Structure formats: structure tokens, C-alpha cells
Image 1: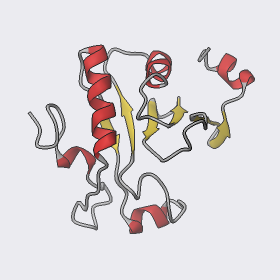
Image 2: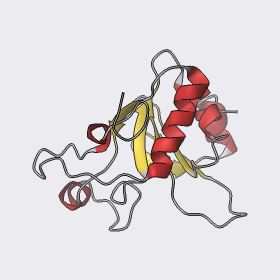
Image 3: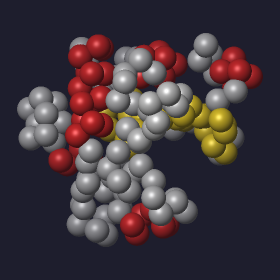
Image 4: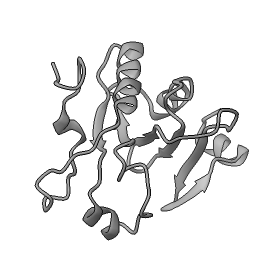
Length: 145
């Protein structure tokens, strides 16, 4: 039982840098999206990483204004669910607007960024260490169709 929702608490989303004393920022839309995933699979998604403090973001070379810094992003997986299956399902969750497929890390990046009403979800893959837009070739390569 969590203090943010049925399955999640603040610790799940805190910064993991070890220097900021576990600072936290979390968007409740992200928590709701994770609960939707939990309900669908009847398993709790595991949050590998979520909020990143300024120090960690800068160390990773992230943009000043990114979804992790704003508490709107997480890297997740679900025990017993393939990354491809999870990728396909999270596309149906309305709150999730950014989805990254990270096969080597065996996680998905999900985020609840703001998009215009008719703007499509932002989909990408981390291929050989590079973040690339999800093209039809990459969809086929990673069996995401």
C-alpha cells in the first residue's frame, strides 16, 4: 500500500543520485498511468528510475526542461511481461504521451508530457546507445508492430 496511490509511494519516484538526499517531484498523472498498467496486467510495474534532480540531470547531459526533472517520466518494466507487449499496451494509456523503448536496459521510458490535443504520441527507441525516432524499420527490428 502506497502513500500516493494503491501501489505507489514517494520513494518509488525519488532521485537515485545519492547526493540530493532523495529529492522528489512526481506528477500525479504519471502515478495514474502506472496504476492503469497495474490494473491491466494485475501486476505492479517496477519503477527503475523516475525523478532526476538538477545535479543528476546535468551529469547525464539532459536538457534543462525534461520530463524526468519535472517528475513526469519513469523507466519501468513489469515482471513476466515482455518489453514489446508492454510497449504496445502503454500506447493505449491516454496519460502516457512519450514512450521510449530501451531494449538493452530492458525498460520503457514513459512520460506524461504536455502535447497539443491532435499531436501524436512521441515514440522512440534507444538503438546502439542512440535515441532515434521509431521508424517502421526500427519497429520491425524490435518487433513492435
